[in-house]
Length: 236
View 1 (cartoon, rainbow, N blue to C red):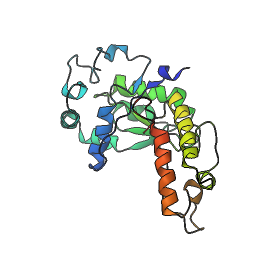
View 2: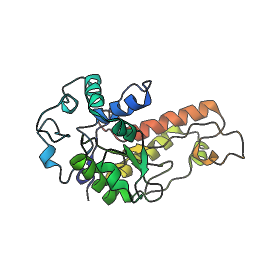
View 3: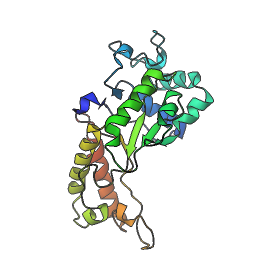
View 4: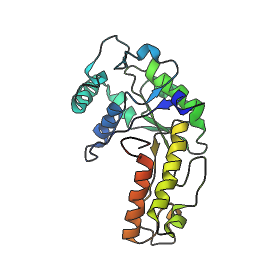
């Protein structure tokens, strides 16, 4: 199934020095036109906007022509405390209560901790529930630890850093981002940029070593690979 039949995604850049709940909502608001489960949401589509709360009115938070801050403020004042807390909750896509949580606005994102292909079917179903059946229709985000690959496995970051070739990891993470997008993943918990100087620490393999300069160069390259550019946006 082509990626366009799963999720269409357009990333935007936003300042990241805002408070966590608002930061998450800024992200969600900014990608409302972009994260859409392609099946069974045509009734929400009004051409230039999506009727996320299904009331037949173009509310401020649904209007892409409105400033982002105004859309966020409008959405926040509509949300209950439970829905606000739900946006801060990261659920497991394999959990038995995932559909109910999406339906009642009790989750903002899902993580697949084992098989990324869980998103290809289950993720689409959960996105449809969130948009069709939840009160405000806030789309879900889907995350995965694509540290050194998604379906295709590459050498661990610590090994790739031995090359002293940042362009290498940029190409690797661009390939990972492409595979993530194909199955609906739009959020990755990478790169890991902690300096690794104690061999007793169990996550050394996820970083780029102990040198701050080398670490910074590979981290920047990884972000460029994951995010793409304005013409070819990828995952966040």
